[in-house]
Image 1 (cartoon, helix red, strand yellow):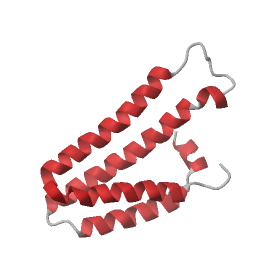
Image 2 (cartoon, one colour):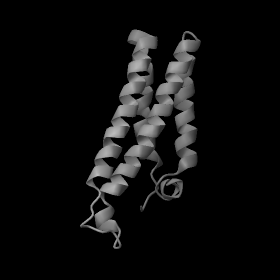
Image 3 (cartoon, helix red, strand yellow):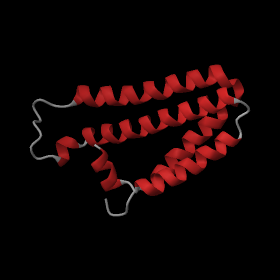
Image 4 (cartoon, helix red, strand yellow):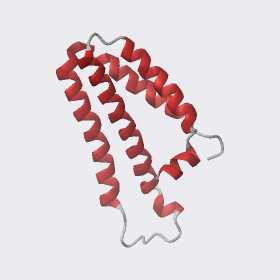
Length: 126
């Protein structure tokens, strides 16, 4: 799975920009609990992005893998991956709201920035 990510995404660029963005958000934290909440949402965001990548690859697998058994299908796996990624993010945000209250906007903005960073980290031509 990681090798496929390396083929499509410049991981050095992604993690460099990602860590810078997260450090800025961590600087806005008021206490250790907020630091942990921001880091928790960050880890959940990374898991979300990886699951999203796997889910999209699995969704297009019937069109890209000539050895794929179309009769067997992969609808359950795709649905599970998409639901799993949403569940990870929702749980992280709910825990973050419990810890940070109105300040949950800080990790949410970081989440949005992570999506932009992912877009900027895609390798050209793939």
